[in-house]
Length: 230
Image: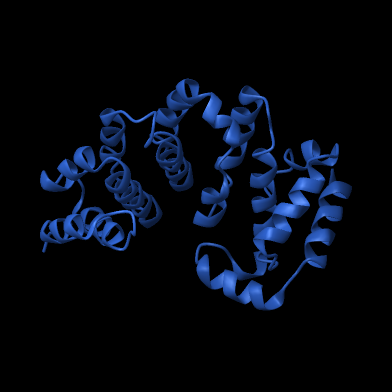
């Protein structure tokens, strides 16, 4: 295990971009700067694609916790390649409690989830009840990614509105979810603002993000602005 871990760390340092390291460190305040190597995402994805074809990939995702931010991101990209739904869920559950930043949390969007929306919904309900910031955030993001189009039901908005947290990265995701819902399911989502169903900060942040969206009409943006809470 240690040999695999060291080999992967060495490869990551070969891909290091020091200017990108400084830039990335500023974007992820919850990650310690010394844990950021500085590997650009396209390079990391390319490495993950290569690694996924080897036996080392399965061994690497058993090694937790990781030392470096990029190891966690690599881990996330490798999870996306798992084709067996049950194995994937087990692997995600093993990983989520070690996720300590928004970027690693948000990069994971396994394509196989599209084929398992009924089972996934049960898991999402479990994730958003977690006490761990990034497990909650991941659950809401999956609801946003896979249930705001053909699979949409109004009750899913209620699931997210019921999440109450003091955590910035949870509340930001709730706002992102509702802003996206306003772009895709406006008539259902806007009622949550009209009826002040969200906490004040989330309410106003939702409107801010919606107003910045190119997917929402100018007429609707003007109306949303009128719903801001002062």
